[in-house]
Length: 264
Ligand SMILES: NC(=O)c1ccc[n+]([C@@H]2O[C@H](COP(=O)([O-])OP(=O)(O)OC[C@H]3O[C@@H](n4cnc5c(N)ncnc54)[C@H](O)[C@@H]3O)[C@@H](O)[C@H]2O)c1
Image 1: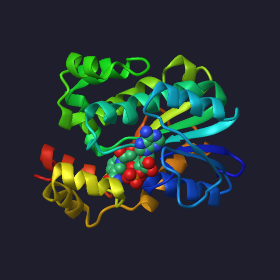
Image 2: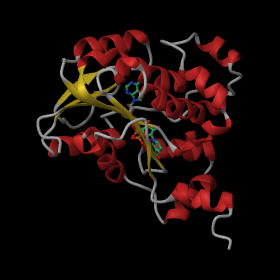
Image 3: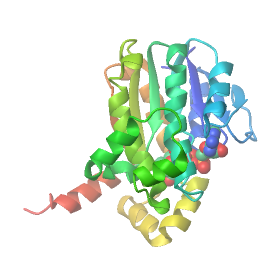
């Protein structure tokens, strides 16, 4: 499905990004991995880069070749470093990289944003999410926090809410749509990676364990990578502006309970 495709993966030094890169290479893709941290293993070509600033994004964009088939935006942080940094990495950097690379992604290519179930609150926060999703570049952090009244501890869920909204908007954004570049999201439930340890510190063990208990186990990077790579492939050519939950049924369980769907 991926033979000969050039696939760029951010967050390649750990967790979901690492497994996505390994599997893509195994399936015959030419992988270019990006991370702020140097990986301990080597998969394809590695490019050290930081997506938290415009200068960092520009450096990455300039270093990447033309003819990219897919961009997998996997890099992300937990929120433990504060809302400003979390929004810069999880959303503004991701968006700047995607837009900066639009001309280097081939016609008919694909962008995959790793979002999260934590962002499903966007439906209750549509005004904030759509206004923030339309901001360009890297907004000045303190003004951003003030303008949108963002509590420091909600940086992570808000970053993923905006990302889910932007995924839908981007699918129809002329720079992508005019060249049939599809933009989709994948939303994992809890996955055993270093970020989950930080979620446990931020959210508490009880919250994470209750999600894990609903579906029997936490996910692994190997559960998420094939879903990302499906969206990279031509098999997903008619899937656009979508979010695919890769969560073992967690969202279904929460929805059934919240809406009382199992009651007769
Ligand atoms: N693990 C989970 O439970 C879970 C659940 C839902 C969503 N996610 C999302 O999945 C994605 C991958 O997370 P993971 O679980 O593999 O975590 P991880 O911590 O294992 O990997 C994240 C990677 O992103 C890189 N990164 C961080 N800041 C960066 C920057 N400024 N520039 C470039 N690279 C940077 C890190 O160095 C790291 O290698 C994240 O976007 C996360 O929000 C994870």
